Length: 97
Image (cartoon, rainbow, N blue to C red; front, top):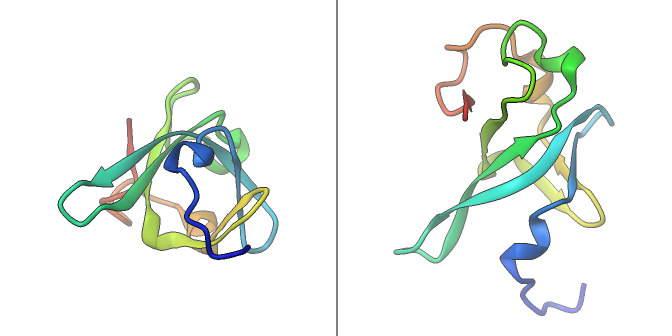
């Protein structure tokens, strides 16, 4: 990257993977903090059904905190914490949308 800021809209449509290479979902929308002019979360759809089976109803999405993002490129890499998702209350910010 050349240091030029990217448009937030370029995140929409990108595939999201965990650091270990597991497909998580696709970015449908972003959550913004307008006061701080920053992205605080990403709404994912087209979820990996194996990963979210029993947690999220098919056709629904999840909102993940942007602090989980490790890298943004052709795809978005997030912390492996998503793979340890076992119970809905494990991380209150990981809610069905």
